[in-house]
Image (cartoon, rainbow, N blue to C red):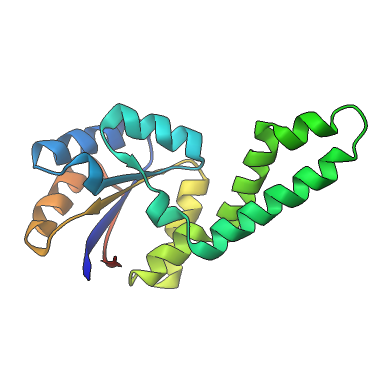
Length: 168
């Protein structure tokens, strides 16, 4: 089964927060609103602040998640042999962060958006914008609500709005 996914790019968090408020006022629930930013900590915090969910279902394609996981293990193994700091790095947030970075580099956002029907060029452009600090909102919606969702996003200042077909 599939449903429409409307994605919109915001150059700053303030505009994305305004969009989230507008969407909630229009009946979009927390579970329907996915937030994607350049790192998971930032998007989790922002999602909690605006009443959305971190966009892991959009970001983390299986290949990207696997690459990130494997990279984290490899970095941890290498770090263990570094005198003095190896065990700290291997067990700490640095290993997780580096593994996450490798997963993002594998093209999770672009792959997922291309799989949902965006052209690879548009999907890659949106992913690059997120990597440069933009916020991407994804709204899982019904066909009958697409126009209202797009209008709310446009009013809040979205710089790019695309509609894709999300496969569940």
